[in-house]
Image (cartoon, rainbow, N blue to C red; front, side, top):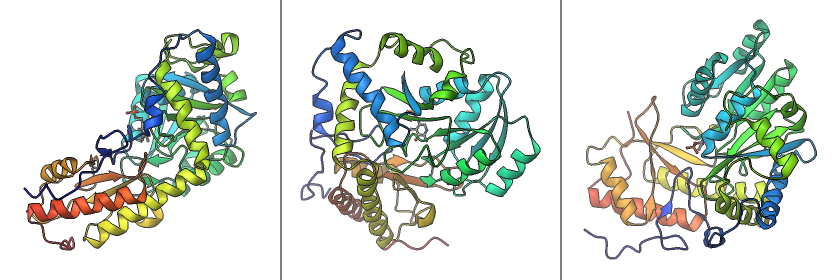
Length: 384
Ligand SMILES: *Cc1c(COP(=O)(O)O)cnc(C)c1O
């Protein structure tokens, strides 16, 4: 093994860098604020929680019109809370699918007994807006449209502004899963109307995992009383709890929320969406340029690629063994992500989290070293 001369990369706390779509590498300060205890109904925590809830709508230009309802659990808990609270029993949802998260939304709605109609495109293809328009025009029973902003399955950036405009023109309601895009890709509630957008603590705001949140148009949320199919995921009830007492109904992930407060401070200090999204775009460019120079091919053309996570085709060279590639990178301090595609054999490398262009340059050096160890010649042979 030729490991010795290769400097092992590490985060500020000495752990491998996570080149994954979240949980991701966080700053030392985001972790350090957690070494305390707070009472869940005590004023100190409630004040921090209130500041978090008030700040989030500002990120999507929704201050004054939108409110944040946090939900304990991972991001999917927030998506399920959003769908089952906003869509009434009499509702019908047009689900736009081009990856695993669109399929997951459909499954949530099926389990909740909500009617759906699906518009599905391949994982490397955005929705066909003319087809979406035709579906809306001919089916007046459709009340809501569900869309994923960045489909993390491939890393594709779906045209959320055009989708929002289309949905508004047809006087339907839009529900967005912006989990992996929130804080990195712009979304403007005034220009692109939506009833709710779901995201989570451990993606582009760079907090630790433990809760999701739904930013809701206040007037739309007010109409959702009694829609929920479960007690715990009832967004209206959760919201009413905050309105009445400022408190969670059930035990909150206190440390995660305090740490998320710190992450938001760091997000704002970096310049908000422009600063954070700008750094990720630089990371993505370094990664893609460097991998292409080695002969790797991206699934997506640059015009469809979000600066979040990049899908690469698996090289054809029989000497390339993904598990060895993965393990070799891990030993050198980089954790990457397997592929989840049905259209192509692939793997993914994320460019979000506490990562800077220098970290992506270091990751590329590690990729070169691991390929050499495996005896894979570069540049790789082009796929046929
Ligand atoms: C991460 C993510 C989720 C939530 O996944 P969890 O594992 O439940 O946190 C949902 N949608 C998208 C697009 C995501 O990237």
